[in-house]
Image (cartoon, rainbow over all chains, first blue to last red; front, top):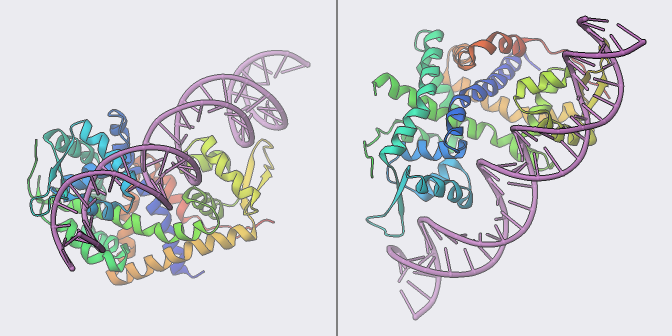
Length: 161
Length: 161
DNA sequence: AAAATATGTCAACAATGCTGACATATTTTT
DNA sequence: AAAAATATGTCAGCATTGTTGACATATTTT
């Protein structure tokens, strides 16, 4: 194994450690609600994509309808998410966060924002853009354009009650 | 929310997408063995830390003894991992990969190395070191020194049969 | 009218976390 | 030497979140 590969192995391992700690803060908050990581993902992506369709959410999360359904049901029942009939196509169920859902989304995100802010700060310069490039290029080539588009799309400030 | 925070939210989301795709290659390989992600983690960290103690592995993975035990048993039975009595302390069970285990470790790692190599390449310059810094700084402050030490520790080329 | 699509639901199962209790062997402390 | 602490293993049971496959309903497209 080359020196170059050795360095990469260190990055692979670091990604594990970083991810491990990165999700630990929200995990702890979620416990207080009786929710898990799956709930977090839904809250996050619905919040960032108001009016998202179920099929889109499935494509982002790469899980099955059944897995999503179970967890989504919890969130609708707890009043964090609402479903609306599609306008152009009434088969669609468009998903939105309620004010309560949006509050939770922000609460879960807060420690992650702080963690990233410190990490970028400690890493100096324009670490942010380099780091962003690498992450984006780790995504499957075929999904890269879509992901880039999705993350940078300005969020419409829609909260439904 | 500030522009700065907006940028960070994009990174948070990207981390999800990158991780999602990053683990997908090994996941597919593992299916062929009837193994899962938990098996991969053990194979990886035992391979990188030959002679590691059970307690250390638990600390890295942050799971319980029971969760580890179940999966570790599979790997011992399949002949990928062996346990040896500790030399200085005979209560210890030191873990090693067999040649078969080492082969699998490398096979699982290969697509991840390639993915990283392309991503770093596409991100130009010394993306590697910046990226590394950010990841390391995402790790909990109290664990950072230990993680840094662990990942950069040259692996003793020990394979036991 | 028929076919395709979007969503929901049921039942069963698998992987991988968890808690709590307890057993054994070994080492450390008293 | 006896007692306490430590490292590991194991049992039983349970929770979360993933899976497959089948089928139901409403709606849109052909």
